[in-house]
Length: 345
Image (cartoon, rainbow, N blue to C red):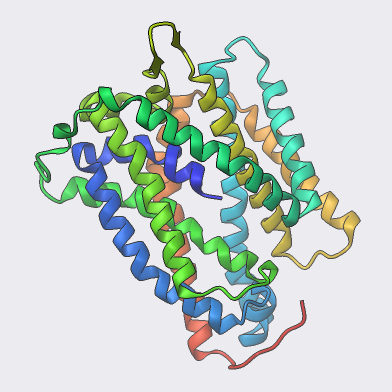
């Protein structure tokens, strides 16, 4: 779900905040992610992979359960809305400047509405079909630009001390914290979620974030890379196959839209799934309402840079602080709440 965030969305923020040390920021943040995987796995084991709202309500009090689930619902809602707005602004700014923004937002949102309503199985199948292509394209652009890379640009490290690294960790950890959505979908996972699986996921997430950061610094240099809005997209523009084949950056459009569709669909699905809505008609109404608000948000007249500043200054710092606080509250319920609670989904 957060591949688009780790690979693309936080990329310019890391380069802006940490500069040349952005790759070191990812490694240190990834180390914290590995450590955080331990309480995350313990929390999943403690809940016995039951539905989060029901478990929290049974372990404490229904009011407390709702208070501790609403922030996660809000986070999921913001993930979907943020991705819709970002995709729309990026699309219009980069390759469809004369197309009506309404058409772009409407097409994207309706597709995600259907996928979210059809359920997690449909989302999983779509992701399984798209992921291999996206991964292959990622390796393709990486190896195609190998001649353009100067790895000496990664040094010297910590030229300006620790502050830039610590600043950048806000955005790297803001991407990694989205792993908390595992608690929202744990009751839908039939196999046992074990520590090694979470650690593997953490390692892959760090790798996905690290690749384009190193690529940006080694291909453009830390100063130029920090000035770019979407460095992974700019890296596609460098690809040249022989003397006659270039301008293959349309592949990056496929990568972005694939990640955006899966991300928005899963966010909408989980946002509704967290709530006690069982009837199909009510679920369709809830999904439709959320997507309708996304359409309205996507039409807000905001340019790509203004939206970037909003994410940089507000969204990621607040999101990280909120999710860490809520997760700490969940841990307190798991430690001091009623033990061995079994609930019916």
